Each structure stands twice: as C-alpha cells, then as structure tokens.
Image: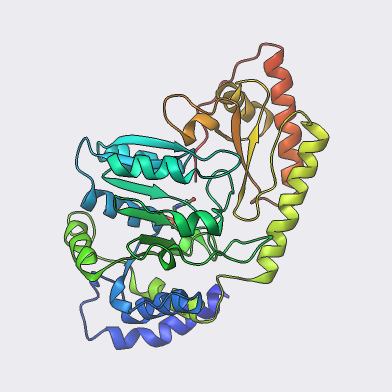
Length: 347
Ligand SMILES: Cc1ncc(COP(=O)(O)O)c(C=O)c1O
C-alpha cells in the first residue's frame, strides 16, 4: 500500500519542481484530500481551512506556541496524552485537569473549567489512554467559553462502533487536529490543523521559528492514501480487535485482580490495579521483559498510581508474553524487588 502510494507520489513530483519546495501550509493535493476526508464524514471543509503539519504532535506544539502565553490556564482531560502535558508545560501554562472518569466526561465540570481557561485540549475520539469515546449527547451539549483544540488522531480506529462524527460539526469554532499516524503509519509524519484561515495564518508565522514546511513526497503519498480511503482498513481493524481480545484474555488469566474495561476503539486499555504500584511496577517490569508507561505519566500531581496503559499494538503471542512478564513483575514487587531501569518511553 505504501509502496504504491509513494510510486504514485514520485510520478506527480515533477509538477512541484517549478517551485522551491518550501510549502508553508502544505501541498494543494494533500489539503484537498484532507478537506474531502472531512467532507466524506459530513463536515464541509474548504482546503484553505487545512494546514499540513509533521504529525499531530507538531500541530499541537504549533497551536500551543500560537495560542498559549506563560501562566495561561489550559484545560486538559485527566488522564491525557503525556506529550500534550509536555507541550503545555513547555509553553509554561498552568494545567487545569478535568477528570475523564470511567463513566466519561462531565459536561458541567468541563464548562466551569472552560470559563477560567485560556485554551482547552480534549481527545474525545477513543481517548488516549482510556480508549473512551465521548457520547453524542455530550458533544451536542458541550459549550466551552475558551478556544478548544480537539485531537482526533484516533478517530479512524473505531472497533465496535461507527467512527464518531467530526467534533466541529457540533462545535463549529473547534480547532481540530488530525493525523495518519495511527490509521496508516506513524513514519509518514503527516498531520494537520483544521481551523479558520486567519488562525492558520498566525500558526504559519509561528512555524517559521522552527521549521519551513512538510516534505512534499510524503504529502503526495498521503494524499493518494486518503483519497483511496486507506485510513479505515477492515483487515487492520480486525487485527486490532483480535489483539485487544488477546490482551484482555491474558489479563483475565494472569492478572485477574486488574480491572481493564473494553474500549470501543483506539489502541490502549487503561488498567487499574487494586494497589498504587504503577511507578514501581513500570520500574521493575523491564527486568521481566516488559516496557510500560506508568499511570502518573498521563496526569499531573502524581495522580493515577493505580493505573497503567496497556497498548494492544503487538502481535497476540507477544501480548500474552508481556502480560505474563507483568504478572511476574508484580509478584517480584510483592517480594520487595526494585527496578534497575528508567521509565519507558511513551508514544
Ligand atoms: C492523542 C494523540 N495525539 C497525538 C499523537 C501524536 O501523533 P503524531 O504521530 O501524528 O504526531 C498521539 C500519538 O500517540 C496521540 O495518541
């Protein structure tokens, strides 16, 4: 699939040689393909409302640099995506966590926090790390008083439900960010921002300080893949379902006291241990062949010591082996062992 897309991209490349190749907003081909991707999902989108970035993390970093000043309050889901925490911390923002409970998002709490925040950052589609999907009723009623960044990186990973509608259908002022990293391949490093042309112009001005555009061949190949509808591949989704089932089965067998609800999509289980052992478990797990991210990485103030995030992105046999290793690590912890390794990297 990638080979064919890059072959098609190379065929198209010569028409870009007339220009210098620094494309501050993205190639016309990819901006149109992303706009069509929103349109197919029910949200009319002119291509000039799309800015191409080097992945969703880049999109978020650019938005933080454009919209956040030191000491601004930024509303975040709690738990949330760890690199979003790093981005807002680097922008010297004060984080305003609003709980994403096992039952989901609380509209009243979000709206109250939105009244005192300068920016909100939410992951309503198969939330990282919990896998939860914000119900349509909450999307329809949520009114936030501050500018709101909606991270839709996981939107195409619907496993037991239809893909959610684009959030901006309910909140037209939403600044949406997207990516093909999870739905196609992270190595493409292609993402985008969907926003008004005036905000995108401000983002482009900010961008000059660190980078001058996204590689053209990758953009052309991604446009081919989006136009072919490759972000939702039944085979890939079926593989994820079966990996998720294997992981849950292995938990039932080897760690029956761990609670891990089944998410309707995304890539991860958010597991809860009866005891607050997450950081110690993550420190010792590499001695048993497993590298995991401890719960506190996904929050602030030392929260989530009972949680770990378990991605089901490995082949089934490795997932089972990993849970066996985790169970051994927990037993070793009970016997008083401590780990020799540092924290695991988070993707
Ligand atoms: C919620 C969320 N946003 C953004 C990203 C980063 O995506 P990208 O690879 O497109 O930079 C990730 C990657 O794990 C993610 O889970």
